[in-house]
Image: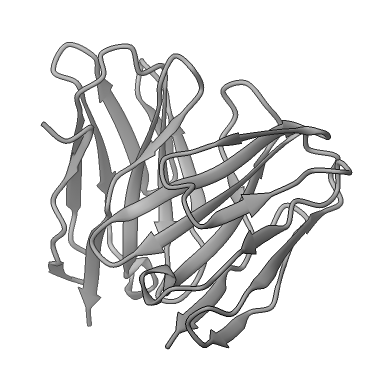
Length: 109
Length: 112
């Protein structure tokens, strides 16, 4: 089983839609979780950390389920500017970061 | 970019040539690392350093050398370039512990 599994997409949604991505991990000792956003031909940028109780930042909500070993990212009221690739990232107990391959989101007018 | 500067932005090499990718940071981060990103493969760790004078191998270290003589700089050397090293290379830093990574702008390398 891969350490991180992420649906590559693309998710093609209209402006204003709500879209959600999941990402599963195999290492139950994972201790920190993040979502990154990467625009085409650019570097990954931290979107948000994911906390055990779930957290929200504007239109973005992140959730963690340790029991099911997945994290999720929900984007409400999608904007054209949300079009990008979203990477999930886990940190294991030795502080090693494991990256997913990314989910591509296309928001159309 | 959290004060992370990578040079060059683009490079084309012939097989067998050597070169050094530069990474410099001005935020005094102890942890610095190099990743490569290939389509469908995600980011893979090449080498990392937890402080000046300390380096260690990541997931895909073969064909690459690093050194960390200062806190600010963490160069990545390709000893004898191969087409399989065609990739986008990112330098990334973090403050330590469980903090997230912050990436430089990347170097797009093509080996012919």
